[in-house]
Length: 415
Image (tube, rainbow, N blue to C red; front, top):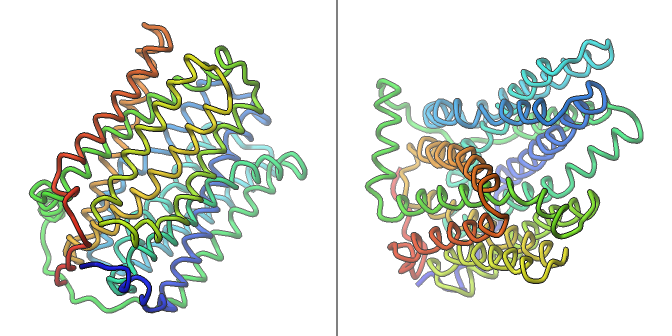
């Protein structure tokens, strides 16, 4: 059995992984800082409205849809370290270009959109390459701990990035946030330069579409990976339905001001940090399949908590809901990533990871659109109960799957 002893006696994480973890922290921080800074700059310098801000957000998310699979294929065929370094260098260069435009007074919405697209390429590269590299740097006993380290960095950056961006712009002007983001990206590249990536045998030349087809078939035929993908689709649709409804609901029905809304949203990042810190203990204490189920179940609890504000319209209930949404699903992210790394051949991890990213990302605009349609056509109570049903569906999907029966992490497949 995958018992407590194996986790307690886990070997220390390698120096190469430590470099990957630091590089990931720096890259995630650069991403979150810039994501928060771009709309602030657009509003303050260009008087952008909701339409322009929505356009910027859409274009910044496009690399996840357009480039996840190509970069996943490259991650399986080339040096993953080099791929991350090149993409992060592109992000640093884009920040340098934006800084020049701000200083010379030539910044525009189009420029912000293009540079946001280029900067997001670094995020996509790390999203597909880092999880693909972890199994080569860490023994199977340490996979959950290693993935927890990476997700903790993302959680910390998610929680601190918006506040830091706002403070820098308020104190020193628009350019400071992008100077810091560029410096973080450069440091991320330097961390990668000293990392020893294990050698991989060259793969035979094949058409890229056949390579991607192999990854899709592997996911579809797997009794463990297929329900994870469907669960992710249902989760993302439900989550973005909530995001479409929450801010107007919080202001008009819960009586929160802008600061109060910000505090409730910040509780999501705090929950992510707490969940990432608790994940190793959760994995030690529970059968592995039960640990994976915690994320979906916490999401149902969080959705019910938000629905309770219909009867008790208190801001603290909404904050608790967002905290639960952060704490539970981060456990899901860490454990499901560990499972995917274990049941996928190492030569295919990049493609399989990219498929999960594309499917999850593609569900987001659908959820936002559904949230908008329901919000316009029905009272807000209908929107919140639809969110509860959606999260209930994702919990049912994963509970009815083979994942629930896992007592331990399966033995890893050979390369």
